[in-house]
Image 1 (tube, rainbow, N blue to C red):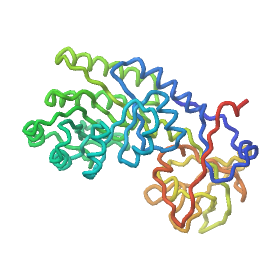
Image 2 (image 1 turned 180 degrees about the horizontal axis):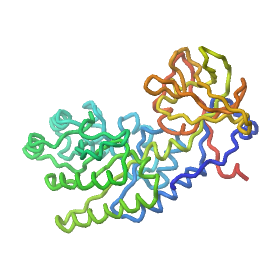
Image 3 (image 1 turned 90 degrees about the vertical axis):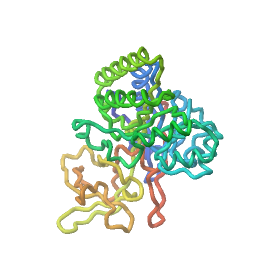
Image 4 (image 1 turned 60 degrees about the horizontal axis):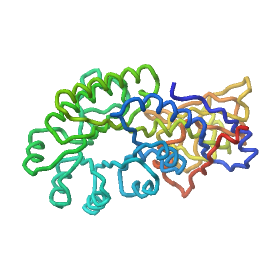
Length: 382
Protein backbone atom coordinates (compact mmCIF):
# COMPACT_ATOMS: atom_id res chain seq x y z
CA UNK A 1 0.00 0.00 0.00
CA UNK A 2 1.03 3.62 -0.61
CA UNK A 3 -0.35 4.66 2.77
CA UNK A 4 0.27 3.76 6.40
CA UNK A 5 -1.74 4.62 9.51
CA UNK A 6 -0.68 7.54 11.64
CA UNK A 7 0.90 6.70 14.99
CA UNK A 8 0.35 10.16 16.54
CA UNK A 9 -1.10 10.16 20.06
CA UNK A 10 -3.36 13.15 19.44
CA UNK A 11 -4.63 13.32 23.00
CA UNK A 12 -1.09 13.48 24.33
CA UNK A 13 -0.09 15.99 21.65
CA UNK A 14 -2.89 18.39 22.57
CA UNK A 15 -1.93 18.16 26.22
CA UNK A 16 1.85 18.57 25.74
CA UNK A 17 1.65 21.33 23.15
CA UNK A 18 -1.41 23.06 24.63
CA UNK A 19 -3.03 23.01 21.20
CA UNK A 20 -6.26 24.98 20.97
CA UNK A 21 -9.09 23.29 19.09
CA UNK A 22 -10.16 23.24 16.41
CA UNK A 23 -6.81 22.46 14.83
CA UNK A 24 -5.62 20.39 11.88
CA UNK A 25 -2.54 18.27 12.59
CA UNK A 26 -0.45 17.18 9.61
CA UNK A 27 1.56 13.97 9.93
CA UNK A 28 4.96 14.56 8.29
CA UNK A 29 6.19 10.98 8.73
CA UNK A 30 3.04 9.52 7.21
CA UNK A 31 3.32 11.79 4.16
CA UNK A 32 7.04 11.01 3.74
CA UNK A 33 6.19 7.31 3.66
CA UNK A 34 3.73 7.84 0.81
CA UNK A 35 6.07 10.12 -1.17
CA UNK A 36 8.84 7.50 -0.99
CA UNK A 37 6.42 4.80 -2.13
CA UNK A 38 5.27 6.94 -5.06
CA UNK A 39 8.85 7.78 -6.05
CA UNK A 40 9.81 4.09 -5.95
CA UNK A 41 7.11 3.19 -8.49
CA UNK A 42 6.87 6.29 -10.68
CA UNK A 43 10.58 7.17 -10.97
CA UNK A 44 11.18 4.02 -13.03
CA UNK A 45 9.59 5.66 -16.07
CA UNK A 46 11.45 8.50 -17.79
CA UNK A 47 8.34 9.55 -19.73
CA UNK A 48 6.39 10.20 -16.52
CA UNK A 49 6.18 13.46 -14.54
CA UNK A 50 4.24 14.18 -11.34
CA UNK A 51 2.50 17.50 -10.84
CA UNK A 52 0.81 18.66 -7.64
CA UNK A 53 -2.76 19.97 -8.10
CA UNK A 54 -2.47 23.18 -6.07
CA UNK A 55 -6.23 23.50 -5.57
CA UNK A 56 -6.02 20.67 -3.03
CA UNK A 57 -4.15 22.78 -0.45
CA UNK A 58 -2.16 26.00 -0.27
CA UNK A 59 -0.51 24.98 3.00
CA UNK A 60 3.22 25.71 3.06
CA UNK A 61 3.66 22.23 4.54
CA UNK A 62 2.51 20.60 1.30
CA UNK A 63 4.01 23.20 -1.07
CA UNK A 64 7.48 22.78 0.47
CA UNK A 65 7.17 19.00 0.50
CA UNK A 66 6.08 18.51 -3.12
CA UNK A 67 8.32 21.15 -4.68
CA UNK A 68 11.31 19.65 -2.82
CA UNK A 69 10.33 16.21 -4.14
CA UNK A 70 10.83 17.45 -7.71
CA UNK A 71 7.17 17.70 -8.69
CA UNK A 72 5.65 20.24 -11.03
CA UNK A 73 2.33 21.86 -10.17
CA UNK A 74 -0.95 22.83 -11.78
CA UNK A 75 -2.78 26.07 -10.98
CA UNK A 76 -6.32 27.12 -11.86
CA UNK A 77 -5.90 30.86 -11.37
CA UNK A 78 -3.41 33.68 -10.96
CA UNK A 79 -4.20 33.60 -7.24
CA UNK A 80 -2.99 29.99 -7.04
CA UNK A 81 0.10 30.86 -9.05
CA UNK A 82 0.92 33.60 -6.54
CA UNK A 83 0.76 30.97 -3.77
CA UNK A 84 3.41 28.77 -5.41
CA UNK A 85 5.67 31.06 -7.42
CA UNK A 86 8.35 31.24 -4.70
CA UNK A 87 8.59 27.45 -4.35
CA UNK A 88 11.00 25.46 -6.58
CA UNK A 89 8.41 23.47 -8.54
CA UNK A 90 9.87 21.75 -11.58
CA UNK A 91 7.27 23.25 -13.93
CA UNK A 92 3.87 24.97 -13.85
CA UNK A 93 0.79 24.18 -15.92
CA UNK A 94 -2.60 25.87 -15.85
CA UNK A 95 -6.14 25.15 -16.95
CA UNK A 96 -9.46 26.77 -16.01
CA UNK A 97 -12.87 27.46 -17.54
CA UNK A 98 -12.17 31.21 -17.48
CA UNK A 99 -9.18 33.46 -18.10
CA UNK A 100 -9.43 37.21 -18.47
CA UNK A 101 -7.37 38.92 -21.16
CA UNK A 102 -5.03 40.04 -18.39
CA UNK A 103 -4.72 36.44 -17.16
CA UNK A 104 -3.82 35.17 -20.62
CA UNK A 105 -1.18 37.86 -21.07
CA UNK A 106 0.21 37.29 -17.58
CA UNK A 107 0.65 33.52 -17.89
CA UNK A 108 2.15 33.86 -21.36
CA UNK A 109 4.63 36.47 -20.09
CA UNK A 110 5.53 34.01 -17.32
CA UNK A 111 6.22 31.38 -20.06
CA UNK A 112 3.34 29.22 -18.79
CA UNK A 113 1.40 27.44 -21.52
CA UNK A 114 -2.37 27.71 -21.01
CA UNK A 115 -4.48 24.59 -21.48
CA UNK A 116 -7.54 26.23 -22.99
CA UNK A 117 -10.98 24.91 -22.14
CA UNK A 118 -13.21 25.89 -25.09
CA UNK A 119 -13.21 27.11 -28.67
CA UNK A 120 -14.24 30.56 -27.43
CA UNK A 121 -11.18 30.66 -25.18
CA UNK A 122 -8.99 29.62 -28.10
CA UNK A 123 -10.43 32.37 -30.31
CA UNK A 124 -9.92 35.01 -27.63
CA UNK A 125 -6.34 33.89 -27.08
CA UNK A 126 -5.68 34.01 -30.82
CA UNK A 127 -6.94 37.59 -31.12
CA UNK A 128 -4.37 38.73 -28.54
CA UNK A 129 -1.52 37.73 -30.84
CA UNK A 130 0.78 36.93 -27.92
CA UNK A 131 1.65 33.34 -28.88
CA UNK A 132 0.77 30.65 -31.38
CA UNK A 133 1.38 27.86 -28.83
CA UNK A 134 -1.52 26.55 -26.77
CA UNK A 135 -2.59 23.58 -24.71
CA UNK A 136 -6.02 21.98 -24.94
CA UNK A 137 -8.15 20.55 -22.20
CA UNK A 138 -10.15 17.76 -23.83
CA UNK A 139 -13.12 15.62 -22.90
CA UNK A 140 -12.88 11.87 -23.18
CA UNK A 141 -15.55 9.52 -24.44
CA UNK A 142 -15.32 6.40 -22.25
CA UNK A 143 -16.65 2.98 -23.18
CA UNK A 144 -19.54 1.78 -21.03
CA UNK A 145 -17.26 0.03 -18.53
CA UNK A 146 -15.36 3.27 -17.93
CA UNK A 147 -18.34 5.10 -16.47
CA UNK A 148 -19.01 2.61 -13.70
CA UNK A 149 -16.72 4.26 -11.14
CA UNK A 150 -18.07 6.81 -8.69
CA UNK A 151 -16.62 10.25 -9.33
CA UNK A 152 -15.59 9.54 -12.93
CA UNK A 153 -16.48 12.07 -15.64
CA UNK A 154 -16.31 11.39 -19.35
CA UNK A 155 -17.92 13.19 -22.27
CA UNK A 156 -20.60 14.64 -19.95
CA UNK A 157 -18.00 16.72 -18.11
CA UNK A 158 -18.54 20.46 -18.46
CA UNK A 159 -14.80 21.00 -18.82
CA UNK A 160 -12.79 20.66 -22.00
CA UNK A 161 -13.35 20.64 -25.74
CA UNK A 162 -14.45 17.92 -28.12
CA UNK A 163 -12.06 17.35 -30.99
CA UNK A 164 -14.49 18.22 -33.79
CA UNK A 165 -13.50 18.94 -37.37
CA UNK A 166 -14.53 22.55 -36.79
CA UNK A 167 -12.01 22.86 -33.96
CA UNK A 168 -9.25 21.11 -35.91
CA UNK A 169 -9.88 23.38 -38.91
CA UNK A 170 -9.69 26.50 -36.73
CA UNK A 171 -6.40 25.37 -35.23
CA UNK A 172 -4.96 24.56 -38.66
CA UNK A 173 -6.25 27.69 -40.43
CA UNK A 174 -4.84 29.95 -37.70
CA UNK A 175 -1.50 28.12 -37.56
CA UNK A 176 -1.83 27.35 -33.85
CA UNK A 177 0.47 24.76 -32.33
CA UNK A 178 -1.11 22.49 -29.73
CA UNK A 179 1.79 21.53 -27.46
CA UNK A 180 -0.09 19.79 -24.66
CA UNK A 181 -3.31 17.84 -24.11
CA UNK A 182 -4.87 18.01 -20.66
CA UNK A 183 -7.76 16.04 -19.24
CA UNK A 184 -9.25 15.32 -15.85
CA UNK A 185 -11.88 12.64 -15.54
CA UNK A 186 -12.29 12.32 -11.79
CA UNK A 187 -11.18 9.12 -10.08
CA UNK A 188 -8.97 7.02 -12.33
CA UNK A 189 -8.52 3.27 -12.12
CA UNK A 190 -5.47 1.49 -13.61
CA UNK A 191 -7.56 0.35 -16.59
CA UNK A 192 -8.82 3.90 -17.18
CA UNK A 193 -5.23 5.16 -17.07
CA UNK A 194 -4.28 2.84 -19.93
CA UNK A 195 -7.44 3.69 -21.87
CA UNK A 196 -6.86 7.45 -21.56
CA UNK A 197 -3.30 7.18 -22.84
CA UNK A 198 -4.44 5.22 -25.91
CA UNK A 199 -7.33 7.65 -26.51
CA UNK A 200 -5.15 10.77 -26.30
CA UNK A 201 -2.36 9.29 -28.42
CA UNK A 202 -4.93 8.84 -31.19
CA UNK A 203 -5.60 12.57 -30.93
CA UNK A 204 -1.86 13.22 -31.11
CA UNK A 205 -1.86 11.68 -34.59
CA UNK A 206 -4.02 14.63 -35.71
CA UNK A 207 -2.25 17.25 -33.59
CA UNK A 208 1.37 16.66 -34.50
CA UNK A 209 2.89 19.35 -32.24
CA UNK A 210 1.75 17.73 -28.99
CA UNK A 211 4.66 16.89 -26.68
CA UNK A 212 2.92 16.33 -23.35
CA UNK A 213 -0.25 14.57 -22.22
CA UNK A 214 -1.53 15.62 -18.80
CA UNK A 215 -3.87 12.93 -17.46
CA UNK A 216 -4.99 14.99 -14.47
CA UNK A 217 -5.63 13.67 -10.98
CA UNK A 218 -8.06 11.33 -9.28
CA UNK A 219 -5.32 9.03 -7.99
CA UNK A 220 -7.07 7.52 -4.98
CA UNK A 221 -7.90 4.35 -6.95
CA UNK A 222 -4.42 4.24 -8.51
CA UNK A 223 -2.68 4.33 -5.14
CA UNK A 224 -4.67 1.47 -3.67
CA UNK A 225 -2.59 -1.34 -5.11
CA UNK A 226 1.12 -1.22 -5.98
CA UNK A 227 0.99 -4.26 -8.26
CA UNK A 228 -1.94 -2.93 -10.29
CA UNK A 229 -0.44 0.51 -10.82
CA UNK A 230 2.95 -1.01 -11.71
CA UNK A 231 1.27 -3.26 -14.27
CA UNK A 232 -0.70 -0.32 -15.72
CA UNK A 233 2.42 1.86 -16.00
CA UNK A 234 4.27 -0.97 -17.72
CA UNK A 235 1.47 -1.14 -20.31
CA UNK A 236 1.62 2.63 -20.76
CA UNK A 237 5.37 2.41 -21.31
CA UNK A 238 4.83 -0.15 -24.07
CA UNK A 239 2.12 2.02 -25.69
CA UNK A 240 4.35 5.11 -25.57
CA UNK A 241 7.27 3.16 -27.03
CA UNK A 242 5.11 1.85 -29.87
CA UNK A 243 3.91 5.38 -30.61
CA UNK A 244 7.53 6.55 -30.80
CA UNK A 245 8.44 3.76 -33.23
CA UNK A 246 5.51 4.68 -35.49
CA UNK A 247 5.87 8.48 -35.37
CA UNK A 248 9.40 9.25 -34.12
CA UNK A 249 7.75 11.53 -31.53
CA UNK A 250 8.46 11.42 -27.82
CA UNK A 251 5.44 12.04 -25.61
CA UNK A 252 5.70 12.76 -21.88
CA UNK A 253 2.89 11.93 -19.45
CA UNK A 254 1.88 14.06 -16.45
CA UNK A 255 -0.13 12.73 -13.52
CA UNK A 256 -1.58 15.26 -11.07
CA UNK A 257 -1.97 13.97 -7.52
CA UNK A 258 -3.81 16.46 -5.33
CA UNK A 259 -6.28 14.96 -2.91
CA UNK A 260 -4.43 11.63 -2.92
CA UNK A 261 -1.30 13.29 -1.48
CA UNK A 262 -2.98 15.73 0.91
CA UNK A 263 -6.32 14.40 2.19
CA UNK A 264 -5.04 11.39 4.22
CA UNK A 265 -2.35 13.30 6.11
CA UNK A 266 -4.38 15.91 7.99
CA UNK A 267 -6.49 15.30 11.11
CA UNK A 268 -9.07 17.76 12.42
CA UNK A 269 -9.08 17.80 16.22
CA UNK A 270 -12.29 19.24 17.62
CA UNK A 271 -13.94 19.29 21.05
CA UNK A 272 -17.50 18.40 22.05
CA UNK A 273 -19.34 21.48 23.35
CA UNK A 274 -22.81 20.00 23.84
CA UNK A 275 -24.85 16.81 23.60
CA UNK A 276 -28.61 16.62 23.42
CA UNK A 277 -31.40 14.26 22.42
CA UNK A 278 -33.47 15.70 19.56
CA UNK A 279 -36.33 13.70 18.05
CA UNK A 280 -34.84 10.40 19.26
CA UNK A 281 -31.38 11.23 17.86
CA UNK A 282 -28.32 12.06 19.94
CA UNK A 283 -26.75 15.21 18.51
CA UNK A 284 -23.19 16.04 19.47
CA UNK A 285 -22.11 19.61 18.67
CA UNK A 286 -18.42 20.42 18.32
CA UNK A 287 -16.33 23.61 18.22
CA UNK A 288 -15.70 23.37 14.46
CA UNK A 289 -17.95 23.37 11.39
CA UNK A 290 -18.37 20.82 8.65
CA UNK A 291 -20.27 23.43 6.62
CA UNK A 292 -17.44 25.94 6.87
CA UNK A 293 -14.44 23.66 6.66
CA UNK A 294 -15.10 20.13 5.41
CA UNK A 295 -17.99 19.99 2.95
CA UNK A 296 -16.39 17.20 0.88
CA UNK A 297 -15.11 14.94 3.63
CA UNK A 298 -16.28 11.33 3.94
CA UNK A 299 -16.05 11.68 7.75
CA UNK A 300 -14.44 8.90 9.69
CA UNK A 301 -14.56 10.21 13.25
CA UNK A 302 -13.17 8.80 16.50
CA UNK A 303 -13.67 9.82 20.13
CA UNK A 304 -10.11 10.05 21.45
CA UNK A 305 -11.16 10.73 25.04
CA UNK A 306 -12.90 7.39 25.47
CA UNK A 307 -11.64 5.26 22.59
CA UNK A 308 -10.98 2.32 24.93
CA UNK A 309 -14.51 2.36 26.31
CA UNK A 310 -16.56 -0.74 25.60
CA UNK A 311 -19.75 1.32 25.35
CA UNK A 312 -20.53 2.72 21.90
CA UNK A 313 -23.36 4.91 20.66
CA UNK A 314 -24.69 6.24 17.35
CA UNK A 315 -24.65 10.03 17.21
CA UNK A 316 -25.02 12.81 14.70
CA UNK A 317 -22.04 15.17 14.85
CA UNK A 318 -23.01 18.80 14.24
CA UNK A 319 -20.91 21.88 13.58
CA UNK A 320 -21.05 25.13 15.52
CA UNK A 321 -22.63 27.44 12.91
CA UNK A 322 -26.23 28.59 12.95
CA UNK A 323 -27.05 26.53 9.86
CA UNK A 324 -29.43 23.59 10.16
CA UNK A 325 -27.46 21.49 7.70
CA UNK A 326 -24.12 21.83 9.44
CA UNK A 327 -23.46 18.14 10.08
CA UNK A 328 -20.38 16.00 9.57
CA UNK A 329 -21.73 13.71 6.88
CA UNK A 330 -24.76 14.66 4.80
CA UNK A 331 -25.37 12.44 1.78
CA UNK A 332 -28.53 12.59 -0.37
CA UNK A 333 -30.22 14.64 2.38
CA UNK A 334 -29.47 11.91 4.91
CA UNK A 335 -27.41 12.77 8.00
CA UNK A 336 -24.77 10.18 8.86
CA UNK A 337 -24.84 8.59 12.30
CA UNK A 338 -21.33 7.96 13.61
CA UNK A 339 -20.51 5.01 15.84
CA UNK A 340 -18.39 6.52 18.61
CA UNK A 341 -17.26 5.54 22.07
CA UNK A 342 -19.64 7.10 24.59
CA UNK A 343 -19.44 10.88 24.11
CA UNK A 344 -19.31 13.51 26.84
CA UNK A 345 -18.97 17.30 26.74
CA UNK A 346 -15.27 18.18 26.59
CA UNK A 347 -14.26 15.01 24.72
CA UNK A 348 -11.71 15.35 21.92
CA UNK A 349 -12.78 14.00 18.53
CA UNK A 350 -10.56 13.43 15.52
CA UNK A 351 -11.91 13.74 11.97
CA UNK A 352 -9.69 11.75 9.63
CA UNK A 353 -8.85 12.69 6.03
CA UNK A 354 -8.87 16.44 6.66
CA UNK A 355 -5.64 17.35 4.90
CA UNK A 356 -6.81 18.46 1.46
CA UNK A 357 -9.78 20.27 -0.11
CA UNK A 358 -10.60 21.78 3.27
CA UNK A 359 -9.02 25.23 3.60
CA UNK A 360 -9.18 25.76 -0.19
CA UNK A 361 -12.87 24.82 -0.21
CA UNK A 362 -13.86 26.59 3.01
CA UNK A 363 -16.18 29.41 4.01
CA UNK A 364 -16.55 31.57 7.12
CA UNK A 365 -20.29 31.51 7.72
CA UNK A 366 -21.24 33.42 10.90
CA UNK A 367 -17.74 34.90 10.85
CA UNK A 368 -16.40 31.76 12.50
CA UNK A 369 -12.68 31.36 11.83
CA UNK A 370 -11.02 28.30 10.37
CA UNK A 371 -9.03 25.74 12.37
CA UNK A 372 -5.38 26.35 13.17
CA UNK A 373 -2.64 24.22 11.61
CA UNK A 374 0.11 22.19 13.25
CA UNK A 375 2.78 19.97 11.66
CA UNK A 376 3.90 16.92 13.64
CA UNK A 377 7.48 16.07 12.67
CA UNK A 378 9.52 12.91 13.26
CA UNK A 379 11.62 14.32 16.09
CA UNK A 380 8.48 14.69 18.21
CA UNK A 381 8.09 10.90 18.15
CA UNK A 382 11.31 10.39 20.12
